[in-house]
Length: 400
Image (cartoon, rainbow, N blue to C red; front, side, top):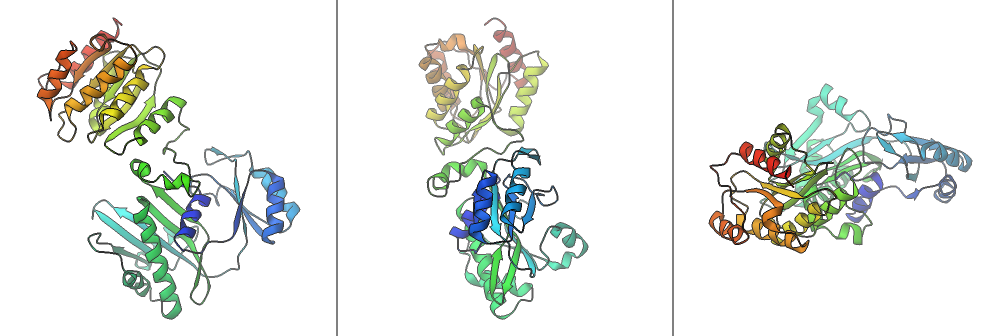
């Protein structure tokens, strides 16, 4: 989940990284009042979870309160970067000065976080790094050891900073890494990090992305900081998708999410990553009409599977459910079987009539088979291919 700027700055401030004083506004009148309170000139920034706002015309300055209201009137309601602008962040303008760059992200090749730092921050930091790669410091972090303050100072020293600037930048590195680790971020970036004077830094903008699957671990985001978790998507979620995301967040065990709504009549409980895409494609290839896409895996609890089953089958027009996964090792077949059957029974339906096919071979397969047999449901083992299971599901959905 990519945070809006104001959300990112709430976390930066909580972590002890200085940010400009700012006010969120939703009307031109509020923008005018905020500019008078903050002191002129001010900067007005659209609040959407996207980069490139400056180049898109979504960051503008105002030198009078009247001008601030006029700029707000032009920005609010506009369509920029694929979003309708509903909120602005008004901040007091800060004096010019050196702009630095600092980020923590995860390197999947090294399988560890890495710290990125440069004395060339600003809008075109990527171009500057490409033209002068040696100007970008890149330091991996060993997560087996606590991140001490000395690590931050090492980064600052690698940039040839000295004295108070070395200490201030090193402290910012430590605090940003702690934020990255604490909130399960995938990216935590401050750009630009403005030098306001010797040993004084100010985070003018921030880009923070949180791991979607870890949002359930952080109820404090909404309860304490007012940051409402939302799925990362190219379009707003439908009510059906939003409800499914809430089901996934109800329990940290396993994944029963990434639900995408379609207008078909065959509900799908399908398993993770490539296998779920293969199943979905096979359903379409055999002429099926999926009611949804989803990914389950990582041994979700009976409670989570039960709720998701109930949710999918409550969708108008859905009469049959196909439960298909590849051979599983970290997901228990019996737990999925129990959850699916419980969800069907909750709706007053007959499991043997509702389940079009149940094909999950693997861990605890024998126990799962016994549970299914008790309800008159045939179990498809690994001798039945994913393609054949999809064909059976489509065939049975047509007779519903």
